[in-house]
Length: 257
Image (cartoon, rainbow, N blue to C red; front, side, top):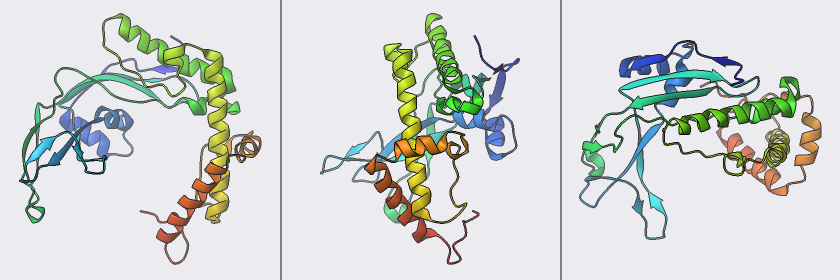
């Protein structure tokens, strides 16, 4: 398949190695290790303070729950780079513990204990953002389509050898297999994000406070103008800017933490 890069050797790590990779910002396997820890356990507390797996339905129809990340006990996989401008597409299989311990919170009346994860067998969950492969400096639409369709082809191959695969594709290519519709959709995304980011920068009003991969594109101004016609994006940008300003230090400088 036309990947720009594929690992020549399989990655095989235990829980301690995964934790070490995640803790080291300079480790080349850090993003792979983070995605290997992509499983979460949702739970809530009953009226006695006992832990119950799942979500609790509120009286108003909503749901409330706590969440905890589940670290793998072993991960075997490899990294791919579909193409320039695209996120890496990490592929692997993980084993997870049958149960994990949750610490008690006596001050809230919550009891601790062991909770089953429900994660039996080998499994994997990750994501790959292909949109920014559409940058003209990276090859534009042909490059984006090659990246997106290559990832889909890899998932097709996984299904063909018998792996159960569940896919969420915002461009809906996985379901429709319509490249023309996918190209139109990513064009709309570019306009929307550029319009939002332009409005966001104007609303914040602090030079250099916010940066985005989108504003480095040579066609950013054209996309921003097209996307600025969406009033909902402008209103959301202003709302976020207001909440950000409330958290800025008195000198107006960007927090470093």
